[in-house]
Length: 197
Image (cartoon, rainbow, N blue to C red; front, side):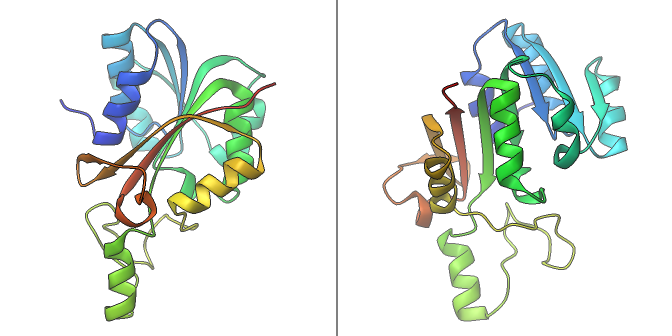
């Protein structure tokens, strides 16, 4: 089973034999890859009970919980990596969640859809409606997305919080794209972050 492109980037860049917390782990696909291919001790936190069951059926250590409240229960620096993939925009306080990730993990991977992608802009400009795309496939009234983050918004947030960006990757479709005009041309972004303690 192949991983979603942002998850494949994360899996390829997590150091082997490390401790990982995957927040919003879904059915555990990334955790299973990290365990099986990188020898990682992967743990998960997931809100959806069906996904928790699916991840546990893979033999993974997953607890049901909410990133908006339950991250506070984890001790400082208890993981090498904390991962939040396609979940940041669904949280009530993305800034607080980001702070918690970097408190819990020595490094954090964060991936999110870029709401400033040219297709989203075009949909609003010419159609006057919130976009429905391959990466944003749910209509505005049913989407779990409550914060419409852009690449530039995220860059400003990490700068304001004095967070170091170690690496970043940008995807257009399933292909890598450059960082120069990522706010316009990237559909999806992946950041590897560090907060100097």
